[in-house]
Length: 172
Image (cartoon, rainbow, N blue to C red; front, side):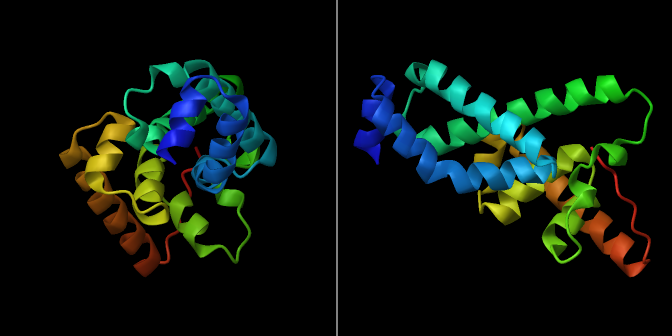
């Protein structure tokens, strides 16, 4: 994998494509943690691949490729979300078919929709992708104690809403 990344850094398109294919599922899971609308997911995926290809020469250590890639994806998700938020201006964000529109059988995504936007990425990276709090703090450029607090706060928020049968969906 390391040589594949090194060759991609030297702009070997075939190696870059293989890297994207190997990381596609993780990227999709993170993108779907932000959006349920397939067009939005496709937009952020496409932008992420383009950004990664353009900036792969800036990757400092091959060992951090996936972390670097997920960070680009999260930044693109936040950028798209913020641009949509400005467009919607005051309308209910749930009407834009975000996370709370996932099929009823997908409980994990239902639980994600109970969280505020900033906590969703943390929850997805921690529980969905298995990153450590230290890795998440590097990806999101946040203090590790902040990440732990968001996880603890999110778990408490989900527990309260489930026990109280009070499901409040935050949308985006």
